[in-house]
Each structure stands twice: as C-alpha cells, then as structure tokens.
Image (cartoon, rainbow, N blue to C red; front, side, top):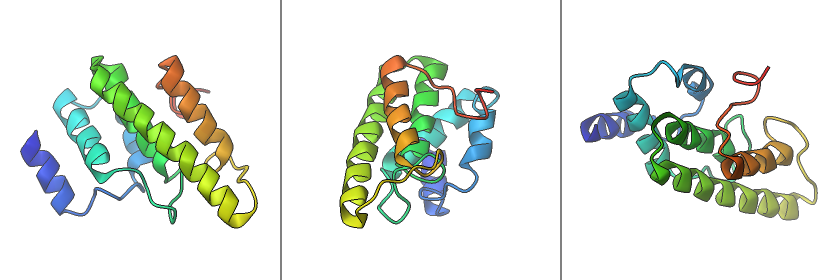
Length: 135
C-alpha cells in the first residue's frame, strides 16, 4: 500500500479533489487496500489551505469525509481520529475565513453549515456523504 500512496503523491493527486466526489460514491465498492491508500493520501496531504477552504465540495470537510468513510469501512479508530482532526481544522478555518472576510458562507457545499455538519458526523460516527448517500 505504501508504494501506491507514494505513486499517487508523486502524480500530484494529494491536493486534487475534483474527482473525490466520484470516489465518495465508490467507497463501498473499492478494494479495501485501494480505499485505505486513498485515505492515506488524504491524511498525508493534510487539510486544505484557505484558497480551497473548509467546505464539503473541495475543502477540508470534503477530504475529511474520506477519512470518515475509511473508518466506517474497516472500523480502525485511527481513521476516526484523523477525520476528527480534519473537522477541528475545518472549524478553525471557517472562523479564520469569516473573520478575514467579515461574513459567513451559507452554501451547503462550500459553506459553514456543512462544515458544522461534518464535525457532527464525526461525533455521531455517520459517514453518509450528503446527496450521494443521503437522499
């Protein structure tokens, strides 16, 4: 698995989140080694910077869902702890961005609401991704 993570990282995918939404839909079908390799890439890449933000669509909360999905799939508490760290980082990002801009973001996919709901999902152990898993 480490080799796959290194190859993915060297290919520049560590910060790419464009195709993560499709991966979210496939978590239940992915081979467990591939799923865990993807979660490792997310973890090693770290939370998104302020340019991407904290939101679900392409920010820290969305990436954190990948870690929560890994926990839901294999039950390893390490992934839950990592998802919760992403949630704390995303909540702090939301505060910093709101302070800097003087306003909150209200969109479900890029806003503060979904970041708060991601943090709640980490507490509730609910790895269902909005719209894809919950409709």
